[in-house]
Length: 82
Length: 147
Image (cartoon, rainbow over all chains, first blue to last red; front, top):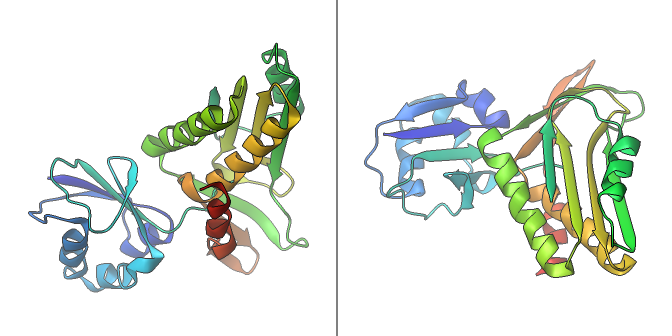
């Protein structure tokens, strides 16, 4: 079981800030494919992953990163702090 | 090293005085304050969302890197979230070092990294509706200067 978090327009598009996901995906990329296959709103949200960033247990990571041992995956658009 | 993530407004002058007082031994203090632009009166508010579990950690890493590179004697980052009005301070950085070059460079570095590596997202609210602020390619490119 993985906790998946969404921020900014991704959260709005999917319609939730977080959810628990039962998955056997081995990588972030595989998790995205599972989510995108669920429903149209997920497919739309993940249609262009170059517009997204991912953090694994609160550290920025790449889409090819393994999910083994990861408890929290967060998806969000490029950050706009400052 | 001090990190403050809060919804409430802050007084940049008071924070700078406090920071300067805690920087004994430094010869230079540099500070930057970011304000909500009113975009020629079009903006009614700015909403800032963040990722609470990650924010302090991400900023801590950036600040630790600045300390390491420029041997800062003190560093401060304040960043707000929530709904802000035009003209209000959003964030502030302050650096203290033996000499000004290090203090200026470290503040510049902190700003570049906070822009695109601290988990905040801004949404502009206007009479016409609301829209998420897109990250700029130039913000990402700015990081190249430090690698």
